[in-house]
Length: 330
Image 1 (cartoon, rainbow, N blue to C red):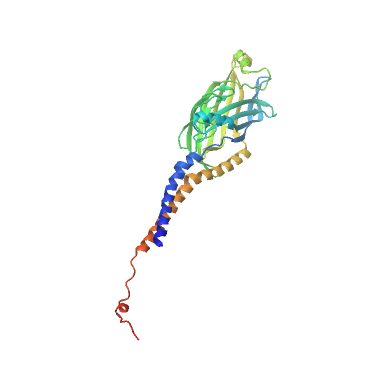
Image 2: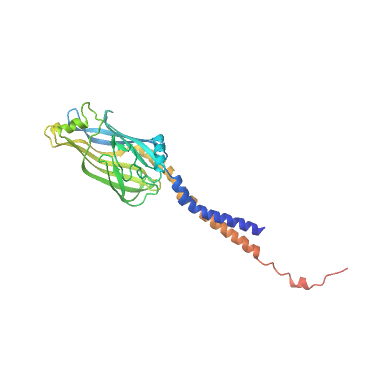
């Protein structure tokens, strides 16, 4: 009986030992992916910001500028691209909607971002765009890969339509979550005006005819939870200028927007809670379950060997005095 039990325990030990690497290196890479129907909203604010009044073409200080960013998954578009791409694809339709302190629209910039659901690498397909202009992204945008590494990444900048290094700057603690801090600086670069402007009659084409150009610079910062690759917090020190041309009335430049853009507190709290939850799920697949299987397998192996050793132990010899005693007969 002990022999059968030890064989069963040995089989279970081998199963657990084999299951550990399968969960970590086979199941996790296939199960960890962004759902195609994802929907996110994020609100950011720049307090005491500088904003251009397009009616008078003068810059003024305002109490706050609000940026509402939405990301909505297009499931039908994802499935269509997957048929030819041969991998799981996510299509995000994004919108950055900027409004002034009076709630009126300052600008809005739509995006279509197409990427691999598992690695977050761009997938180049028709429709990839920023503000209606076709683009070809390189690097990441919005989200880092699962199991983010301590290294620099290429990060796509929607304003310049280019990818530039975003630098790993160290490990930090953000509200009880271990995060990797990344920073990217975009130097002054000439960029296009948004196609949707707050004043009727002012379009990129009419501004271009005046000879006035738009320039932009920013310092972009992200605090990224490394297991999920999700930013728990982000901010930008952002500045835009209009330069030259007749539109400025002889001025060399005028500030179109300048401010320190930060995630609003309620959205920061929600994001941290959500990332903590998702981190636990990833941790189960990458650490808890694999290590638990290995420990359980080792215990089962030890128990199987112990039972096998007990089953093979020789029986104790009979007492010599009992063996030599003559049987009593009546």
